[in-house]
Every structure is written in C-alpha cells, then in structure tokens.
Amino acid sequence: MDRAAGMAGRLRYHEAAEGWVEADPLSHGDVVLARKDVPASYHLCVCHDDAAQGVTHVTRGEDLRAATDVHVLLQTLLGWPHPAYAHHPLIRDAAGRRLAKRDRAATLRDLREAGATPAQIREMVSCRIGDLASL
Image (cartoon, rainbow, N blue to C red; front, side, top):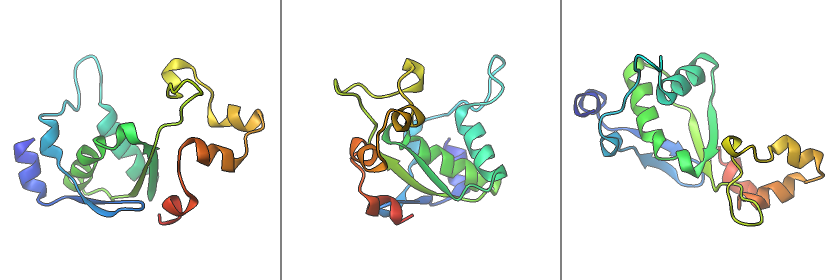
C-alpha cells in the first residue's frame, strides 16, 4: 500500500453535501486484490465495473464509505475515471437492524410494492433531497 499510495500521490474524491474529501488509503494497510480461491476482490471488481459501465455517480451505504479510499487509489493507478460519491445512512427496520441482502431484508422494490413512497424511503435513510441533488 505504501508504494501504491506513493505512486498515486494526493487522492481526493467528491462526496455529496461535503465537497472534496481527502482519501487515505494507507489507513487500510495492505489490501488483498486477488487470491487463489477468489479471483478478484470487491474493491477491484467494483472499480472495474464502474469504469467499464461509465458510472459517473455512486450511491452507497455509509458502511462502505471507508472503502472509497481504496477505490480512488485503484482508479488513479489504473487510469480509470473517478465518479462522484454519496454515502447515505443505512436503511434500518423498526428495531434498528440494517436492511441487508445478506439477511434477506426487504429491498427497495419490496418497500415500493408494499406502498412506501419515495419520501418515506428518503426519510428511512435520513437523507434530504438536497444532499443527493448536489451530485
């Protein structure tokens, strides 16, 4: 990581409602990008897919915000574009548990089919329209 960060130089990304944020990939230590049993890591795959698909704006849960430091480093080293980012609070159920795919929680589609309005869903993520509009 030290060598990669040195090659990349100063790293920043644009975060909705905050502006430019300094990335600190060194805080992650050495990151595994591939292993024998796993062809490529989430970090490498998501950066590749975003670049290949021409993604310009990424909206993810706040639990993945720290990973953005690694993503910006990979994008820089590989010459890929840097999308703008918006990290939102996690959507939680009435008991405060996050709604996650791994737990087979309700999806946005499920919520909409159950009658939730876009305003209600925005309220669930404690996200104001203006926060995302700045993307």
